[in-house]
Figure (cartoon, rainbow, N blue to C red):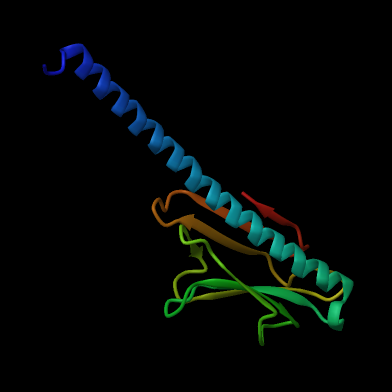
Length: 149
């Protein structure tokens, strides 16, 4: 009344197939989370640039990327040529972390009023916490071009 060898082989094969499929599904989901976070960051940069070009509040606008160690890392929309206080604050998903700026560091991307340009090009890099080789790079050129790679 036990299992036949054929039944055992089929059962083990099915478990193996399910296990392999689960790994691929999880990897795709993690990559999707990284992609989504990068695109959302780029959209916040575009929002700040649009506000700067439109002269909202008669000032430039920017985004602060703060890779905090004492609190949760975040990025925040701010008005003005430099960060004083945030208008809106956003947090990375729990699966993603900053690679650049490094731990404890801050990078401000401040767009000039009306032109929407920067004083220098800036790069922000995020990565998966579970696989630091999987990264997304958000670049803003001094001319204001925003890209995600």
